[in-house]
Structure formats: structure tokens, C-alpha cells
Image (cartoon, rainbow, N blue to C red; front, side):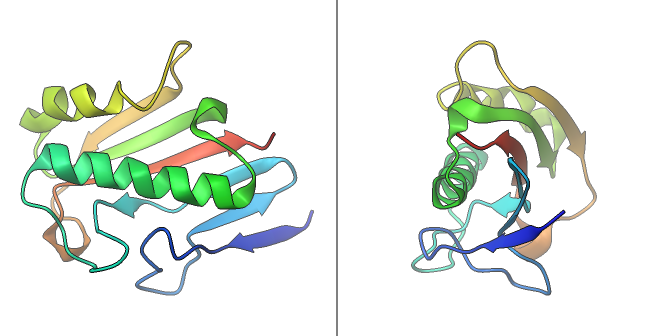
Length: 126
């Protein structure tokens, strides 16, 4: 199996020893994406804004890899506070259509940069 690194300046660069995504065969595995603006590296204040930017970052990475949001089969959503589940769902539902990807959502003690949400995805390439 060959692995290919994916990198785009349309999403924040990695802040550690990892890739924005890896393509393995016909599959794209993104790293968790915070809701950071790729130009300023700033996090917006609300969980909805962070979720929207996180998903925009995922989208940009998938597109760089030759995939799209329509081809996402699984996501994982990491939440600082599970009480934000409904607010994140509102934003999340604007990025996906039925059949929705499989998904896990977990509350975590802390996220990098004290973010409120982080989202990762697995997609099959076009």
C-alpha cells in the first residue's frame, strides 16, 4: 500500500508531526480539523462558527485529495461540551445530505488551542 500526503493552504497547516490528510488507495483520512481560519489561525468564538470552519477545512482538504463531502463515509466529532451537540448538528446538517455519513461524537476534556470542536473524516475518492 502506498500513502500520499495531502496538503493545502486552504486549511490550517498541521501544528505537529502529522499530515492534514493521507490518501491510502482510494481512501482519504483527514486529521482532526479545528475551526481555525486558515489565513489567520484564529478560532471564532461560538461553537457553531468553529464547527462551520472545521467542516470547511475538512472540505478543502478532501477537495485537494480529489474527494468531496458527498463521498464522506465516516466522521468523528470531538466536543469540548456535549451540551453543544444540537448546535453542532445544525451546522453539520448543512454540509451533508442523505445518506448521511456514519458518525461518532464524543466529549473530550480538552482540544488543541482550547477549541470547542474538532472534526475528522474518512472519504472514498472519486
